[in-house]
Image 1 (cartoon, each protein chain N blue to C red):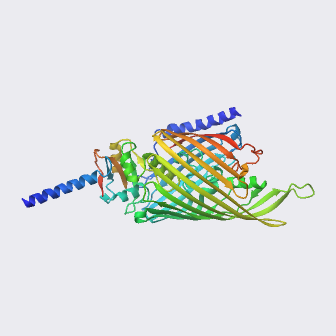
Image 2: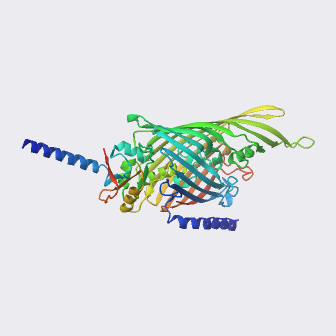
Image 3: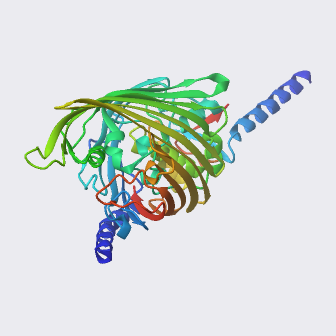
Length: 406
Length: 141
């Protein structure tokens, strides 16, 4: 097993090496394909390879207990300003986090944006969804101190549901005179759920069945940021609403013949989210805190009738990071996550994560991180098949990641 | 005599005002490509540019920020309210979420000035003692 990990890690690093050799001489790329009078295309990209090793559970991947390299992200984007106040941009992306992603490339975002003025702009296409400090950049390792964001708020396995949607958003910045400024984004659109997505894996894991035939999920929401008169201090509030989250679910009955082995259900779910954030950049310090609440309400219709279900998960974290110099930043956070209706003492009803992280920037195009987690509880483990026994309430996890970018 | 004194006083006042605005940013001045129509900015307007609140000049041309890492960090903090690493992270977040483009980088003051001179819509902070061929200086009010 260890040989397999070493082989996969070596393969990933060998893949990354030519990228690294290229980017050390390439600080972003700008190409003028159409002649000197046309606006140039601006290219950027990154490649991240991570390693997770846990003392007790297979968290985030099916093999974390033995060390896993199933933690990879790569993306490339292009942007151009072809007309006044207009911007066109797109990003291709592929990732692998355990059973999700599996290196399948897809269009992460592609949009056209027109900015009328500082107060109002419009963006349409496939857009990244705003939500708190990190939702729209949750899989960009470069843009944060930590290997893993607080998973109770930004679960890496659900990024295909939470990150982007096909629709439109309005955005702008409203000055408030001496009270600072209010930045806003409001979006509406559709999320297309695939059979292999993180959310589907979660439904299958929770129900013990198999979910299929998803309708495009309709989502709408907003993100407000109050940029206060104090330099570096801002407060945020985000609300999201998802409905039309309908799918067919086939679950085993556990009944012996002649009774049917499975039963087909129709599930309809509505999800409400709210998120409150504060961020303070003070000298070389970065302080952040967020609270996140998800309420899911659904009806499941079986041959025998319809049942209603409700669940509430909430999570919060506080973090601090200090940049010592160009190449070293140290940070930490504490995250608690709970699911409603369960006793706080039960390990499956909560998960608490204390983290210490070291970020090294040896070169402007190369980031290396080492991070330790001490975790109590197992609420976020999700994968029942990989974690059939959950009797260790205090366990450790090592997370290492390296990123090359241009 | 009175007229001479008045003129001298006015000249001294103008020199002081000019020196003050030219040194409004720690050891640096603001320069721009000649395609940029304005000749002055308020400190708030400069901050709006460096924090992506203002992305286009009045004529609709995109604002392209050019940075000189390490050499103008103090002035960058005054302009943006962020330390250099925080400024870099801020723009990385915009670039990789489809909401903006990363600033361009130059290794030397001469390279930065040349890049600004050749890039329509470009604006940059440059050490106050740098030679400035082909670019215009933007006064900070």
